[in-house]
Image (cartoon, each protein chain N blue to C red):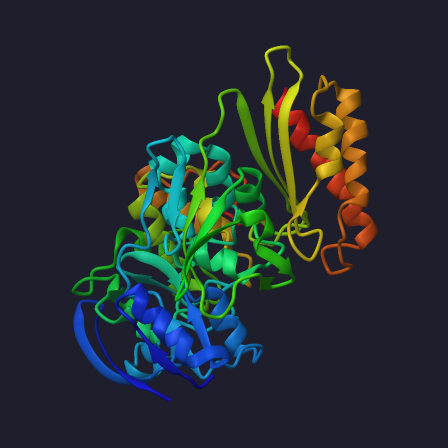
Length: 172
Length: 284
């Protein structure tokens, strides 16, 4: 099997690796770079747990051949906070209970970061359409939607329909 | 998975590699389908040839005649965000926006989708309903083929191993034409369709149907053109009764499988229901 020299930045830090042709991005991020914030869930591009940004575009790291990111810029959950300062989105996830067990949270944060870059003031429907592919096994979808609303400046006011499941009491 | 990976920098170099590797080579565009098939052991190429590093394959632009040309390496999301595509046909944008999730649409390409020939995919029926053709390059030169006839069976196209889809060409849409893409999703919003219906319809001056094209997804080994339904409408006034009777003919044109999205009988019935709804939407 062929090997390939890969140059990219991970959360702003330049990386250079020699990798086999068949390595997947999720494995290179976690095993070679040690950035284990990004989780591997279904491994077939459905659950959203391995969501990362490649040049700002949201993708499933389990479906991306690592050779594809040569010359690109990667953002994972570790790259969101700057100098220990959480982003407004991360802060809103804490305030609104945007997680329960937490396994999907890195992917939810990355997906929602991409959403807010493209739609800075999304309505409930836009949030649900965009976040639909990020599964939460605890069904904590109302909190996630509220957190995204809050981070967008809408003060955590959703239309109450949520992404599904039972609506928990507001924590704020 | 274990393969040698190649990144040619020109189409000619890619074609030379594909010719050299023959059946041991496999082309990769966005990689969403290829990676899955390789991980599941359904595809075991010795060589993967990527189109990623070839420039000029991802443009989306209106043609001087009023059509639309989409580069084969344009992602689904690029079509979704393209003013040129939206200006050509909002229904075409709907079809690309219906595929899976944002993550998949950021990676999956227009040409890769067509080469994958998954009969349940959203774009092929809409492209076929809009009478799209693909441009194909090989060492023997360039040829075109209708999207409607590209797939010949489940996950099988008429392309040979040394042919590369370079672009999709959509012809100008005649004035008075309406288009729609409907996807029946009884389970989750990111699922494959249980049945999908793409249709275009053009009225004549006397309010009869001058032309109509109806193409269904997910109810056969390939997309299915509903020619008997079309014939029952062409030249007629599309009254609700006429539409209902015409749509009923689709039951004998589709060839669905029993699977987790429903029995074959159920999908035949849903093909009728959604064909009728598509035609109602176009004649409202």
